Picture: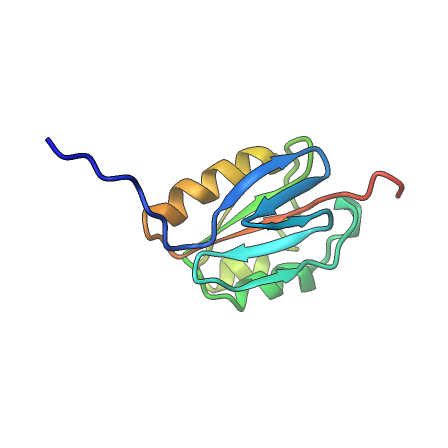
Length: 126
């Protein structure tokens, strides 16, 4: 049997740690959104408590089938009122700690799913 290495043609998270994630050669130390179609942008939120409906509206505009929300070092769930824009567009949302979100995103994106990950990377000084 001939074995071929997996070649992932989507942006994947190559490593992560407390307060940072890395995509390819770029390390992010602030909240970021990464979509499997290559879109990537800063997610202007430094603390879980600062999340608003507008943050999740940005995610809804990506029109993916699923959004994975990495809530920081521990699992936290955003209020349903904040995620309304996703629910109204029938976009799934899963919350998990940021490290689990990175792993889950890589698996789903590698399978060819239309997925985005929103990683809350909280500023330790806030």
